[in-house]
Image (cartoon, one colour):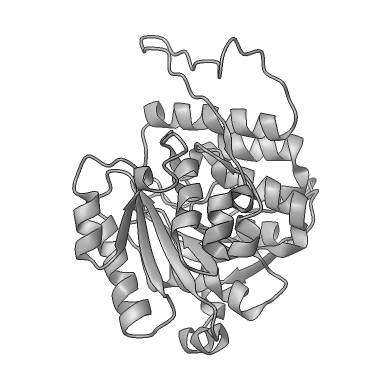
Length: 323
């Protein structure tokens, strides 16, 4: 089955093999081409939109992404109100490239300093909700090499045109070394089996680990954020549990080309996701301390503690800020 046919089957809840069926509710699916920029600007009214780029050592791409959003969606056609780069302790020129492109750059260490800066994607996303000004928050990874306005249009489209949708997840074709449909190794080998076993109602989410998604602030502020790489899937689990599957949609964003990670980098990412998902499922793991280390032959043990940041609405400093 080709990539396109497989994605269509998953969207519609049809079998992807003659003998199998998708055992999950059908999540509403859109295509980025469904949303015209002029129509979205008209539908926006007084809703404010922040595009947040969590970044660590992404000087090669973050400036290009921020510049395109500023030119196409802020200056030329006013859809986006803020481009925010949340810099997660970069040691390269990420912050300067982003600032030169017109983004507002905030270091994770500057936001909610009363909380230890644990580093990691989820911690950066949590702090970005606090730092951002928008009613709608859009997240895009900062390593995309073929970024286009379609990423933002597709993600905000359902939120601006449908009041019953509160969270939108992107999906796309992810080539690996030029081969279409071969990317997303952690998704296929780790996330999808875990979802099928423990959270089957999420099985029709095409790419549960996609880093491109958007949500309404009044939803995002009410859920915890896993601090590490498990955050993408944890948000789906928590939002569906608290607000219902009917509030979630997904959108086809076309093709996404980015920096493919080595297996050595994917192993810690996979373990963090497994720990987070098992924790959400109530599975207790035998830990001697904050977490069990990842042990690999020929490498030093790597400790990957997983924790949750509390819903922002519970923080007095956030309540004062949003009053």
